Amino acid sequence: MEIVLIRHAQPERVVGSRERADPPLTARGREQAERTAAWLREEEIAAVWSSPLRRAVETAGPLAEALGLPVRTDERLSEFDRDFADYLPIEELRATDHPRWRAMRDGRWEDFASIDLGSFRERLESSLTERIADHPGERVAVFAHGGVINVWIGLVLGIERPLWFDPGYASLHRVAAARSGRRSVLSLNETAHLTARSAGS
Image 1 (cartoon, rainbow, N blue to C red):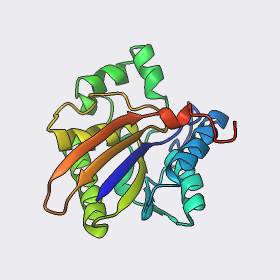
Image 2 (image 1 turned 180 degrees about the vertical axis):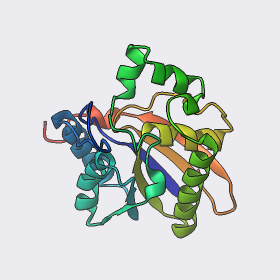
Image 3 (image 1 turned 90 degrees about the vertical axis):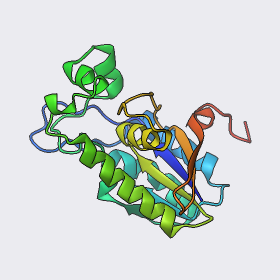
Image 4 (image 1 turned 90 degrees about the horizontal axis):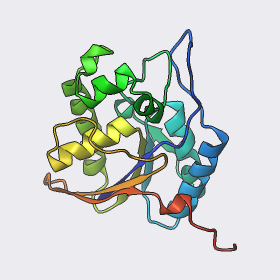
């Protein structure tokens, strides 16, 4: 079977929230989600799964609607920052050399939050192993987050560093997987759909 991992599209920036930050997509992000749906709707996708965080669900929505499928959520696909009171795009953290970025880059996640990287890996592996078992011979779309994609594909490739590449907004990442446990990365960071012209243009 094939898992198509899709990073959520561009979300709003949230600072100073009194509760858990769960930003919606920006106007640009909504366009990215529509382009993703237009690109993938011709593929034979059996199910659409998503992190329950709003930015992922809103990215999944147009594809699910186009395919006539529900968006099925799994809490285990949530990003490591799911309980934070702010949402700063990782691009901003990197550009400003933010202390949180340095800690994430160096694998010192416990320095900025009580995050157990081992548990994070385990819940991702548990979720995606279930998708593999439930959909033999099929293709499944999974909408998630940059950290989720880094860590799970890192597990497939045997990469210990948690953040080792930069998945773009609404980028596609494909993994072929068998119930026997064998997995192969087919592609990383597909973004042609975000700039491709529509058929009528």
